[in-house]
Image (cartoon, rainbow, N blue to C red; front, side, top):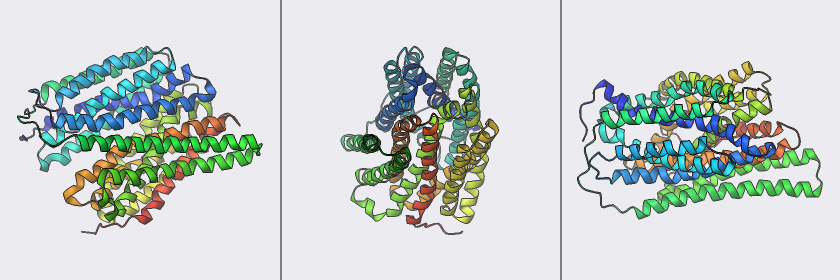
Length: 473
């Protein structure tokens, strides 16, 4: 039941996004790479980092939509969403303690997998609060507050990096726990839900099967592609091929594997999630490919940034600089998203989405040739501008392409497959970085970041297959 919204209701409904993004923004780019490097051989740290990220993202792909569906059907007297947020947060605290207490790699993997489970229990339910409680004419405002709550943690996390570099791991874990618990309690006591009186009768079996199949598609395709790239590298080494031949061939194989995994994953994912109707909307399929190519690149750069800074630029306080870099990206992302949305309505979506891919390519190439921190931060500015423009205009393009009466079902495919972008970028990129680093320390990051630049460029190129339906008003 929707009611008149007061100004602070928009904040309380969205406050838990701040806690969730404080956790993910601290763990993925800062804490996880730091801990993995403590427990594994230095020459294999990218492979092991990729492994734990792939497992965790696969869990997220399964649990988040499942939790959302279960909360849709909940008849608990607290409401449909808050019990899941409460339970997920309590489990988060316990599983964060496992991460902090990890004494070896596999204990860390256990903690991360359990944390992905619990955080996505809360995440899946949280997504329902705005549709449940906010009148349709005010959802734009509520979504704007949600976006702010998701961006504020990027600046707060800038204080996490120095603590990690100084060895105060438990202090960072405690801060994350506190952010989750405080925002959960605010949600619990200030958000008012109407309990669902009658459980929906729609069966869960078919949606659940689709979720499992989508997850399997991305994991199997990505891991198969990673094995193919590894086979090419081993085969060339056994043949005694020249180093230049190995570098060129494996690099091209990696690019084809990443791009191919995304295209194949999206193709079959659309068939599983939408069915035979998918062939009626080819522009939508290519739009999802565009989205995943861009997200795979930007997410992977974020994930491997700390190792790049430490091993290529030899920065001692790499965690600190990583958080500063992410803060700079966010600082330029926010205004470019606001301006990009306005320009998309004025000049069309497609050309701005393509421009974002090209600008992100240039920013990544600048990152590759950076020799000091100021150059890194300038590249962060450029990538931030591109990402903000992309996030504002790509989604608008997608909403134009789907049939209005089934927009939720179609756009849900891109949401679920979004985690697949991380699986592709990290799952293939991590082992490749270690393969190339054996030729020269730091070379692996230059190669995979070059591939990520190519993915940005490909994201613009595939828009040639998208037929824009936008018209100037």
